[in-house]
Amino acid sequence: MTFAFRCGTIAALVSATSLAGCAGGSTLVPLQPSAPAANAFSFVNARLPNAGPPPCKGQKNTKQYATVGPQGISTKGGSLCLPAFGGWGGSIQYPNVNEGAQAYFTTSTTAYQPGLFPPPGSMTPLFYIQFSFSANVTFGSKLPAGNGIASEKVIPLKAYTAESALAFGSLWEPFGSCYSIAKKVKYGGGIGRVGSMFLGKHMTPSSGVIEIYQGKLVGNKC
Image (tube, rainbow, N blue to C red):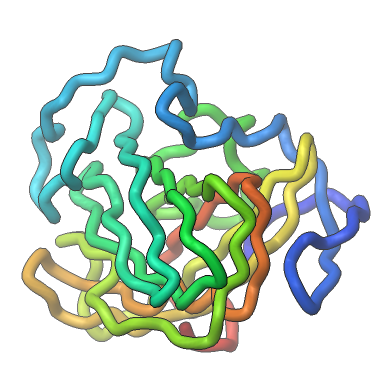
């Protein structure tokens, strides 16, 4: 993991495991229609001027991030649209779940408000995905196929690493990590199976962040 965590301990809310929590700047604002930081910036219903994947239906943009939601989660699993921002976008696949819920996403190419993100590590992420779910969900073991995260900045056949953490109050807890070999897709390169980090996990309505890095930084493949 490249997160620069400071030591602390909290009980894990992820099934079948207990992880070490670490102090962050502040609680991640739930990605609901009125958040994150919705009162701080004015939304514009137009795509920012950059090349890359198309925006999601209903996406809203600011100069610092893009957001979309709610998107319905099917019990059979499926694919959720990621807001297009800074030449990035695409989708993330998720496993079958025990019950339906709604998902919210905010994407950015910077940690635009540091307190909303895990403490920085030794490397700077290329892309950030903030996420939250509206209800408790338990993910199953079947992940649908899909092109995944896409960008003209992603180089096919190169390795990329996804790392995630959940926010619990002022604490951050590692949630999962994996690497993927990018494939050539319509909008440049595609980073597939990032949603595999949800396999077999249980999530409360707490929020989290997925960070995308260049290179193979962990040993397990998505």
